[in-house]
Image (cartoon, rainbow, N blue to C red; front, side, top):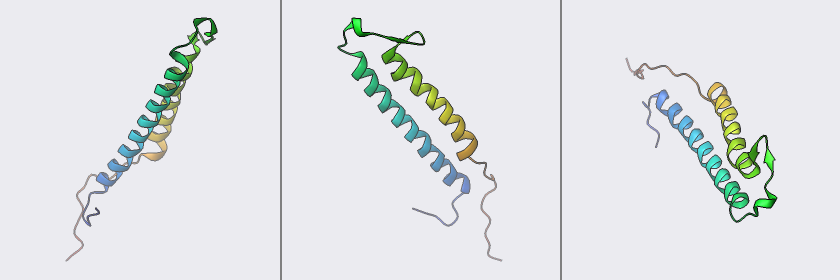
Length: 93
């Protein structure tokens, strides 16, 4: 529902919150799926290491957290914007 006198900062905050929530849901779904698929019920003899981490931990936790850090930085510098905090003014005179 759009309101004619809605604060621009409210629209911006909604957009930014939806972007952040979407990133959170995607990262959580990826992490849970990868960790479950490659971590549970696995023969310990097949375990390999990536940068000192067991492979399922690296690909299920370290990798997505690193990607989220980069995406959050890009999100903050490219997607988010400053808004004027002044209330909307009426144009009727």
